[in-house]
Length: 147
Image (cartoon, rainbow, N blue to C red; front, top):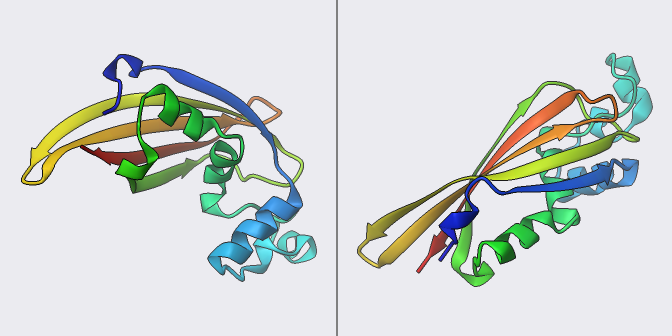
């Protein structure tokens, strides 16, 4: 089960936003919004370039391996977890060419006992800033590990 001594631990990573990663994500989720696929269409809507979709903030923490590093550090077994919840609070859009710095923090680990055993709820919060040191998005993630 998760190592509760890691509550408050932070994991820092950087990510260069690429146009193709945005396109890969929207293709994978089946989102045909032209603002996520076509720079000219996005510019006609007032954006400076094609914009990343709201769930894009999950991409950097996965592609950099940071989330899996945290799982290893917390002694969480991947075969025993499930993704329970995700939320995003945006302050600025994310565009191709942005350089994001993420700081993921283990916010809370709580335990509940059920009929089939113990469950642990692990809460992560990731704050992303861009190359202008502007906070871009706050992402909250909840994973559950079963005993």
